[in-house]
Image (tube, rainbow, N blue to C red; front, side, top):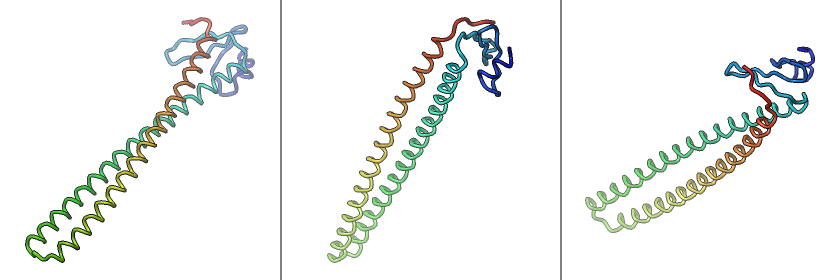
Length: 162
């Protein structure tokens, strides 16, 4: 019997056979009695494993996206602080020096810096939003796949045996 189970399920399988039933040991110390052919069970197990891998990939993608968002927020805060400091320094220099030429040069520099910062911030926000949308789509697809696999596996379970 065990040899037949191993032939059906593969060498690394820890299942056992009882007649035409396959006993699959579970983590909660129960055996689920499944009446199903070996190839179909192999496919279901493979789908379950693929689903778990997809969930891992999604979790990693979500964590990576969250980390990217945190980094972007920190960069934006630093850039904002730098711009504010530059503006304050320019105002102080203008007040102290009082030269019109300095004012014109400084105003041009500040305007250029602010435009660059705004363009960078908008670009970063667009990239982050796109990343979040991609992650959400992937999560939805994986959830659908996992639900289909769970429904398929539950459909073949006949009896739970202690």
